[in-house]
Amino acid sequence: MGRVKVNLTLEADVAESARTLGLNMSRLAEAAIVEATRLERNRLWRAENKAAINAYAEEVAAEGLPLAPFRSF
Image (cartoon, rainbow, N blue to C red; front, side, top):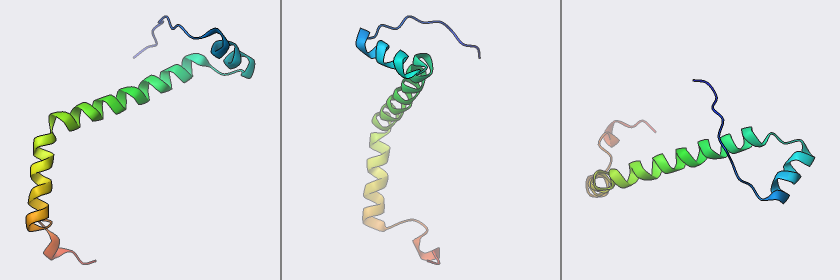
């Protein structure tokens, strides 16, 4: 997939500091958006699957891990 242009508004001092340091603001913004997207997807997945996660945790607490008798460590 190719790159796409977007408009981004920053505080003037932030942009000037980045330019002074020779930082690639597009790449930094992209990396921050990728990370924020990953975190939000994970948060949504956990929220959507909360009931199943809690049910499994309760099962493990009550009965132990399913394959625990076969562990060699």
